[in-house]
Amino acid sequence: MLAFTFRNFSARVVVERAERVELGSGVSADTLGDAVAAGVAGRHGGGALLAVALKKLTDHSPRLLELPATDPRLGCRVTVTTDIPREVGLAGSSAIVVAALRALARWFGVEVDAATVAELALLAERDVLGITAGPMDRVVQAHEGLLYIDCRRPRSARSCLSLDAELLPPLFVAWDVALGAPSGTLHDPVRARWEHGDAAVRAAIEELATLADQGLEALRARDIPGLQRLVDRNFDVRASIWNVTARDHELVAVGRRRGAAVKFCGSGGSVLGVMRDDAEYPALETAYRDAGCSILRPEVALG
Image 1 (cartoon, rainbow, N blue to C red):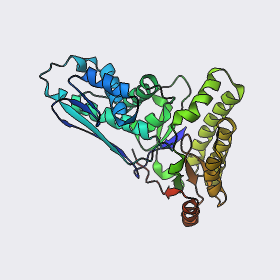
Image 2 (tube, rainbow, N blue to C red):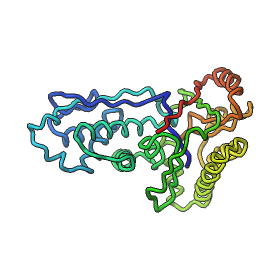
Image 3 (cartoon, one colour):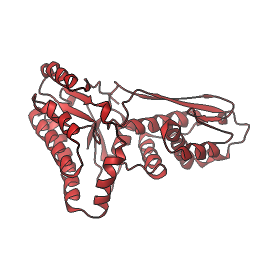
Image 4 (cartoon, helix red, strand yellow):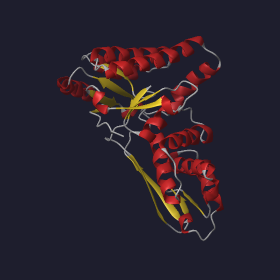
């Protein structure tokens, strides 16, 4: 898959001294283990995401659970602030987990590289909270910048390729906050069909991977029309197996009617558009705002 991070939104996690272990606004405990248990029991919200990040860090580095009670690092308050629009496919929950893993690792002196952060973040959400998720969001957030990610097994260090963000054509991101829904609502049925060997789902997933391979070549060749065809095809393939709402279809159609290629950013609620040139943006901005949506030009993080 092809993906990139951008600076317009962020999730920020801060760890500071406190009397006890505090995660978010609702979890307070005397030990790391008790804080994790209390946070995970909450299941939802920032406290749970901070808790699962702490759990996977302690799984990765069990020595943290053996720190003496006198260790000053055990008195810590972990807080999160984020302005990422919720439940519109912009990877807001994984951004919090990745930020928490980085902050907690720094606080406790645990060395973790980007690949490890991505893997721990995936395990935190998928295995602890039971969220249907894949590696892509976590990998690109852990590495940052523009990446080509080969999600086919077996994955290796060469499965993630960092690219020059200057290869990107003019882009926009638009979203409708009224569409908010947990990503699992859309992913769970497709995952179930995949696990039951549904031929249509398996063929669609394979085609999406092929489109990403072709997209990498189009980027390198700076072939914007070719990339636009691939982006449009990406959405059409997804729509063939996802339960796409009428409003999501309209989010895509608004941009397509004005010459842009448009696809989902994630599981619905937001779209990524590829323009032929920057001059197209003012008309697109007006059209999306008239349709009740927010829109921006992404400031791509360079990694």
